[in-house]
Length: 593
Image (cartoon, rainbow, N blue to C red):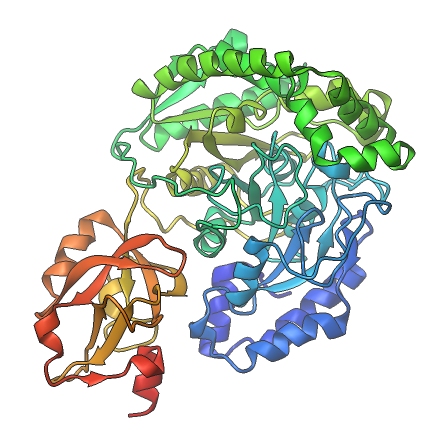
């Protein structure tokens, strides 16, 4: 059995104990022999998967942050030349291009294995509203997997892939994570591009990440995030918000505002999670949860259902009989809503956003159950709307209020079914939530997903202070002589990318080691290969102090138009230097020496 944790695979590839072909062959055999739980809608053929493996054979493992990592894609997210169904065969189409987020992951070395099952048109939190079969829980097939990103969650929990993409509008990336004992990151809206994603509520949709651990989820986030000019809902997120790390304050809903729908074990497990956060240095603060609950009700009781209708209006009007009956009933109601309803709801939401914003003056993070209970498949099929609504109690408000959230495994009922909590904070706190979640995960359960694999000890400190991102272009690149100055300080690779086409690139005189000079020019510039590294705040000063003249830290413009602190060279420094702009990267220069 190969451990598919991302860190484990990357280490194995780097030291030569694992080969990509060996790992992918293992993955395909595992899927072939797995118990049928209705995980997949479309699996790539062995030949298709191996074409990605062959492409990686031209690269070195340390060149790509997700080299050889197998992943699954929810089937409302496009993968080029593979059918997208959104859970409806009648709706299906074959895209010529992958979604932006998928393109990024493949470019980083990740290998797609297939498209996963979902509640049709991402409408549901249960995982049973699919003509491809009700996706079954990875612990007990009589129980729901959670939805709508059902297949993606079960694929990760069952050890079939290292990570998976889902979407999350109302909890679709968090509820399935909780029901399958894995981590579900619901990123800040707009942090990951939704270009190439079949919309549910387009103004609220987010691409989510399922992983066995918070560390793995962060590895994927580092690659997947980024502004996308082609996506009108993409945005630059302020990731510099500071929240105290020594004794953070976490909000807990009043006991009378918590609903567990008769599940006393889930109630006890939540109380235990609150106690664990206190043990981790947190200070519990009781909050009024009423405005959060009122916001949650807006999502399906208000006009946002009309946005779901707008997403597939022509299809539902032309082929209403092709929809799952429950899906048709829910989305069809959107046709009857009026513009006046939308404006009234927006006014109400603005009031609720103002009320809930005040809570962050008193707390740094909010903890809730991810869901108040879990149901059997037959129970949901008997009462599909009411029970589904119960599951959105603690999730529906998050995107409406522009929060980030991460679902964390937090224990088990006596019957062996998982329980999870969600940590919530304002947009931009995604990594802080993952770091805190890693500690809570390690303190709460012993194993990952439905596997006999221990939960890794957290390697990040619990902090809500964003690290400082630094662009490097020379000897600090991965695998080169000065890279240890970053890794020794706990810095992590965010992405390999390029600058904007506005720079000349030089090999400066002197050394060893040889040093590059990156100079911005008004014309005649080119794009230069760089890496973006995340450096802990408390290590940034010592790192910068060691930079010799004529180099320094300034703002570097990247290919996507964003700016980031990075190595630049003063103009006088290129006197006598070799112009290597035509090579496009320091690695190419080093190869030729």
